[in-house]
Length: 431
Image 1 (cartoon, rainbow, N blue to C red):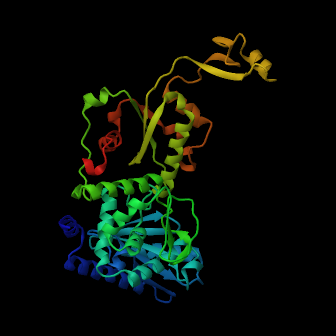
Image 2 (cartoon, rainbow, N blue to C red):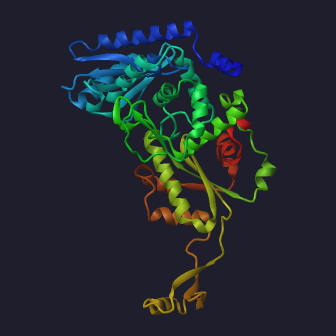
Image 3 (cartoon, one colour):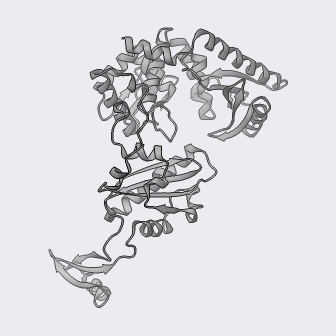
């Protein structure tokens, strides 16, 4: 297909670009080796660059594999020390291990410590299996299939579901490579996705474990692991639908979508659904820890403030933490109908004693139950959220910053790009 060749020309590094990338990467490897004298460890390139499935302008992952004789604190400290010495503008990030991210000759590198183990199933930490993933793909992926992986990666990027991080909850690079191994080519993956159901289990072997995920892909180097565990139902569904639409109408916008246009202020003002912008100070933690807490916070609001008819919540992070809360109501009447027990229930008398003379109306009987119209504790959605979070947790790191929460009913206090993405219901390829 001409469209796939056109996309490939835009995303695949040229021979010169790949040669320069590998040359610079090997220079970094040599610099790390020079700092490991007397230490039983070796650096190696892993990930897409090592597998030859990388897109243009990619980051390079370098793992330092240490002997299991070293304490975890030592390998972490040594890897951070080396990364900070070699890389420009080094930043320490935290996953299961702390690691260093920085630049070298204009290329972004990540230096990560791990243990050297004999088998992936004997790992000490989760990153210990990564070199086995690299070896497996290098050994099994055919040369021509590397471009098929690139196409699938860019397609997933274009529809917004590429990446296993908590912010995306999508398809990892390794999962993308396994899908190509499983089905053969980019178009074969797209076509076969139309056979996927509510739950799909895939494997390259006969090994089969059950996992509580919409998509399961058994890791060929660690059969007790689901490579697709990060894929949410939303990302899974989006991929199936986007693939269906691509089969109907091939368009480069599936790979390179246009930006969401800024919404017309008049249209925004006349929407029946209201919008509340909540923001708060950003806690000093990584996205993979922060985003699950934002997900929890959003669900907490949705489940407990149903009187406001909340339809959706969108969250994002920049210098602060933001929630965009869409609802049909932002202010409620002063009184609410409070449901009591059936008239014949033994607790009916207690209900009558509690509300007689205190309720705005009632108690009264309706459909066999006592009711009373009582004053609301919070009429505005802002006050309701404040009351809600004062009595419950919204996440370990967010809890510490509850007092920094601010509200605005003016949607333009939010990031315009995030606002447009949230309120424009079109799919990325439809823009």
